[in-house]
Image (tube, rainbow, N blue to C red; front, side, top):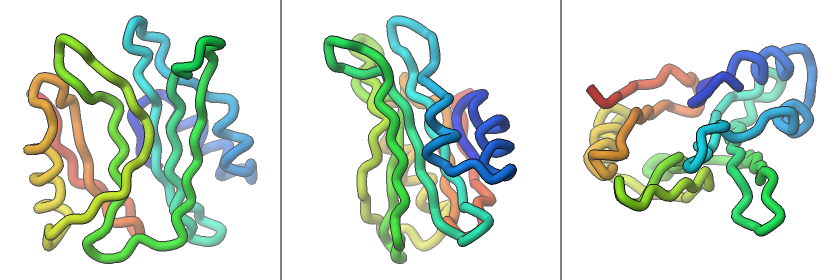
Length: 146
C-alpha cells in the first residue's frame, strides 16, 4: 500500500488482519491542515484476490461539512490507461483540493516516462511529490519537490 499520509500503516494493518477496505477506510479522514484540508489518498493491491483498490477522503464541499470518502476498485487498467489521483490543483494563490480520481490515457512506454509526463504537467509551485507504479507490483517510481 502506498499513500500520502499517516493513514497508510494503520489502514494496511487493518486490511491485512481481515477488515474490508470500506470498513477500514471509514475510520480515516482528511488532513487537519486548515484552510486546505489536504485529502488523504492511497492505492493498494488486495492480497486475497489481487484487486486494485484506490481510496481518497476529502473535506466535503457541502454546507454540512464532514468527509467524503471514495473507494474505487477498477476491474482492469489496460496499457496506455491510468487513474490520476491528485491532492492539489489550481494555483498557489487559489489552491484547490480534489482527491477525486480521473481516467487518463498516455503514450508513455514505461512508468519512468509516465512519471516524467505527470511531473511536468503539475503546477510547479504546488508539486510536492508524484509516483507512478504498475498495478501488479506497487514498486513506485517517485519524484519530489526539492
